[in-house]
Length: 308
Image (cartoon, rainbow, N blue to C red; front, top):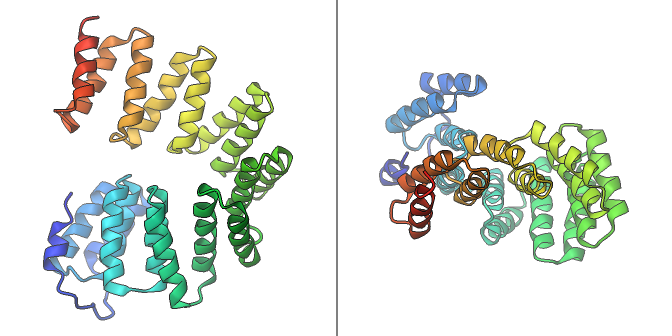
């Protein structure tokens, strides 16, 4: 779906407080019942009527996120920030940039949000936590810990923040403290898939591969869309010679993220290793539909064809 119609029709004016249309009410109901594709059609219909609707733009962002279209969600949120220029929308845009691996843009958004100094404890908590994550990835451990501590002062009962502290501890090699933090996160929320993954990494680092895989399996059962979990679990299955288990894990993940080319190629490799050449060829044909001139896909397609 293209968002060009929104960009072309938006004239820089801001909508007055709006009464939610029948289309948007229907879209919310469809989202509640996990039907984002149908909800998206109603949102687009609403935006065609009123391209400056902030409520419709919010729902557009949400539907794109639910459908796994993070790039389109970012484009929609960028337009919404242009419309509102408020603290919460800047934080949401920064969060989307961060989750998409665009740390520099995320950091800029969070700094703009902080400059506005509009106090919202929930949004401020997110800013501090994401800034901590960005600094942690950059290797600035002390500054990351400082931001995590600021977030902790706002919400000391956050299971997500305990995962952040655990990840920081892993980076500095303090496995015992990391294990304690991941377990604390699970005490607060047993459904935190990232805590199970973190705990699995700690056990793996300690050489306990059985517990490592068991924790990753728990994480995958909770959230099969967690890319880190899928990467680790499938690679550990491969190390143990459980290639079919690895294939099944990646297959479930690919149902949600068909455009993840790196994981798709990994799946092709696994299928070839297990002599499932027809399945591998079908996956390559799907990739070629996305990118018909890709030399790597064409080369692999020709190589796999030989075995049929």
